[in-house]
Length: 339
Image (cartoon, rainbow, N blue to C red; front, side, top):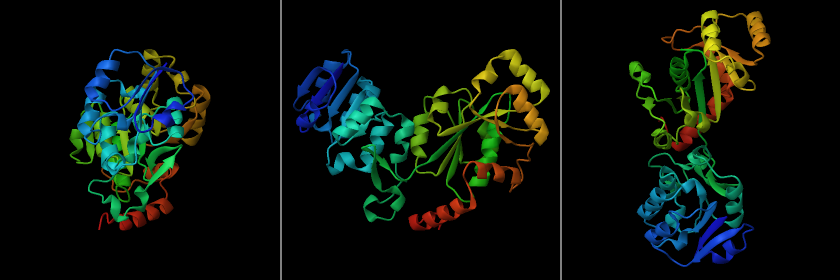
């Protein structure tokens, strides 16, 4: 059953086709809302932002986010400059408030398809971007499924070792070096600190608990590469994820000894053979024996090389082609980035 707290948009919310267990109308202090519903079971709360007294003060939303499970709350925004600005929305996201919209259709969409961080990460703007100047055509607000979002989208790509030490950390480092020639890109590793050995400011080590904040910080970037390690939450955030297998006999035998069902889990996943000396025929044999489809076969690489052709081909497979690079450079000129 569901809860509705309404004020200015009471008529709109009364017309929603959902079961209601409790409904309040008026303007309330955050403490009143918290005391009423903190220990109250509900499926969803539809919260008219104008029902929160002094909602323009983001600290009042922060109080709410601390006390209630915001995954269950759908926030109906008004059209005021304060609550619909990019800065305000970014602060909501930083608090874990992901479900917000401006109309009844958006409420029903979020009711049936609640957002995760990945769905709203692109709403954040580049730091110090002047929203009203019109300089950034790629950051104009649009409506997708009646939910506020942005044209600018960051591509989040994850890498996970399946065999022991399959090379996800170094692969992220090398891919970052290739991509940074044409893109704003950052590499993130979760629950490990191996990036410290590369001495690169665009390689960030963090924890699962701090990951959302780090992603928010870099949401204006074009590409985020994540070494997910064993973080289930990090896997869920990625737009796409590649599972790395080093196909040596000893690594495969160790893998099967630890978990003989792992290949079944990888079916229909994007499997990459890394640090692989297999020929094209060997890869076909591997696919037949493992019943897996290999997305790409990466040979052992020298991470000191400046331009690695094998990685360039892999990046083309990921959708980073010459035409996209040219379009990106044009966008950077429009934004005034990189001179």
